Amino acid sequence: MAELGVTLDGGQRLAETLSTAAAQLSDLTPVHRREGEETLRAADIPRRTGRLADSSHVDAGPGGFALVAGTAYAGYVHARNPFFTKALDARKEAVLAAERETVVDVLSTTIEGA
Image: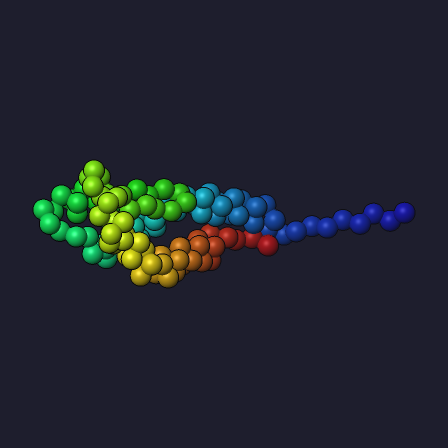
């Protein structure tokens, strides 16, 4: 019986760079932080005393971001005027585009080999 062998030139480099790309894409916190801050700036937060706006911030992590307001009455105000939800809806496509651009950039500049 004849032996059949396959050699993949650049296979090791491909495996290494795929691993590097996967590591870079496993944590998109910087993208989420940037997009979260943009979304927070886009939010039309009611300003009676300014405390609600002053208590608002972004919690960003590998999987996304959250807009948070730290006053005791934030939930009540948001229930009557969903200012964070409106900002998220308005920026949804921009956030997805930023994530997509990051993925394309990492894949196109990192992966090498076969």
